[in-house]
Image (tube, rainbow, N blue to C red; front, side):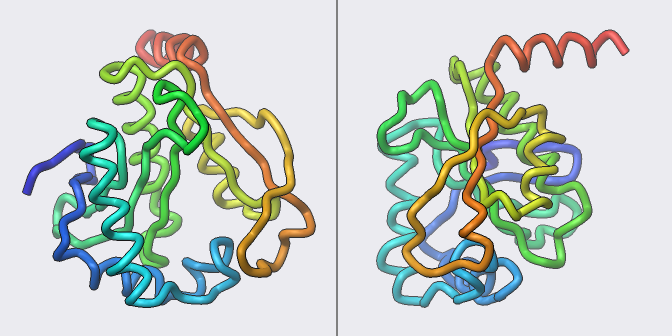
Length: 192
């Protein structure tokens, strides 16, 4: 297993073509899919034919970026995934941070730990200038995670959702952190 990133409790590694079942299980939980597809699971066909091939393609097109399987270091248990990748129309040095974790992993700090580590790796190793993340305005848990990761609210907007998702009428929010903001925060933390 090639580890991309290791934290105190997590191992983040590249996905492989053998990981389809992990993604099917993750996306079959209506709680996990609540703010993604209104609780509707992703089909096995979509995962095998669309999502997993796209995950694997990122490693070739954007070295150092992509989707990362998150494993609990102590047990090797699959917790979910993080993505750290350029959005379609954005420069490569302004990647988007995203995550999707199993319900059993919620509320334990794994998402914050993984997000902070990816943000730091981006600024330290990849010359990233700005990291962005977005969620539905009503997704308070995700918004708190972004704030705990050092990001700040930069705008509210309305996104087009392919399916109706409860709460979409309240719009979406984008959070971000710049290299300067991260360096100032990182410097302050090292002095404490």
